[in-house]
Image (cartoon, rainbow, N blue to C red; front, side):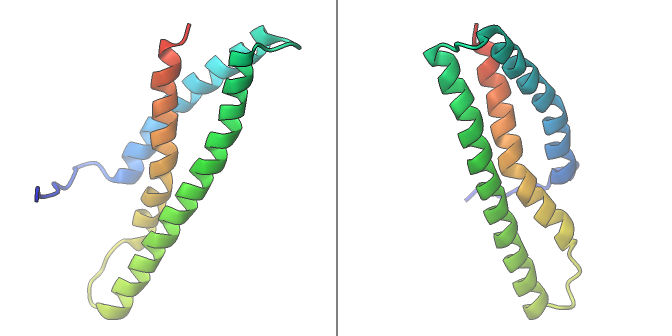
Length: 115
């Protein structure tokens, strides 16, 4: 089993920076697409608009679940090993940002290819 290396930059900072770069790109692309579609969007546009709704719903629930699991893990660790000092709040926040970051980065990459 490969060992996990500790990254010098905390996960919260990496996810936040990734979101700061990906989100404006995705929003700009989609708003332009809505504007160009007008009152009668094509089937491709309707699929993209539906995808926006579904992915936000799924990302919210994935994020919520990841944060709940991390809170459970932190509570269990605190109950079993109270002498170990761990920054639980940052781990919970990083767990919650992870699914959102992954989806935003994937959308930015996918929408860059769309013409």
